[in-house]
View 1 (cartoon, rainbow, N blue to C red):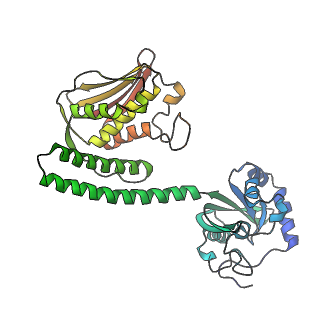
View 2 (view 1 turned 180 degrees about the vertical axis):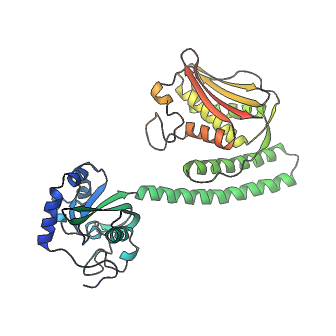
View 3 (view 1 turned 135 degrees about the vertical axis):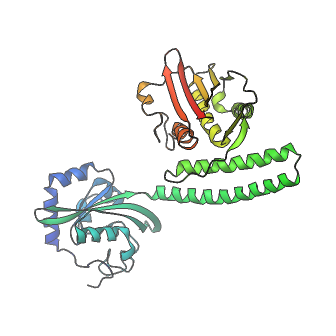
Length: 373
């Protein structure tokens, strides 16, 4: 039979049932089929399904595993190209670019596990659906017969979200670049207006905030250079006061500043510094009960300045161990666990300071950011 990529030959019905008997009597394979949560299928050397797990069966809408016996992955998943050649999946002109087909063939040729990504267009109930599958093809030999353990993980939503995020940051950065440029030109023409200076500084900080968010979401990205500027502690206090004046976490709670900050000038990246302080204060307010007070204080020493945020609650022992771990959160829902992680990341890795906390009975919890002067 003709093929454009993988061999077209199939096993006979007798060979399929014989292979199925081998797999069904393998304790290891049966254990994997029962415990693996993702999609798992066992293929013969002709790339035909010999067995598969319940998750795969449910996805296919098949009640009896025998109904899937002998199908190739593309046919089972309703790939729109699987019927483009008489021998089906693996033999069409499109199959040489298919991540699943390439992984399976590489495993058969090298007898090594192979990982790839399969971008699949399937026809489900008369509608074309785009899927992205993470593929791992792992060869295994049982009673002198070679099989392929095919692990599939649906990462369609992850890929879609990543694409939307990249598009968003690309578009928003273009708009912000135009806004920053216009504010700079406006500041040159109207040099005496305080409102123009507010607009210019706000646009710069908004641009920096977007850059910070992109950095947090893309764990392997490189952060841009620090935007250092002279900023007074009085300005930082005013910014924080304005932000938390109507903040939901501040409802029925008091935010107290322990002393007058005066006009002390600090050379720093104000966007990053305030991002750390805002996270510290937000966490402290959210942990506090109605009527309680959160205190922000500053300690000036010869070679460093320390910002501390204190509340009266105690962090449980099991939480303390993982406070700064990325994606760890005591709150439900996805997308959490970046607040305390970002404190450590920005405060230490980028600003060059030290972030820590103590949580003791009688003292409450105090988070501290110390920066060199």
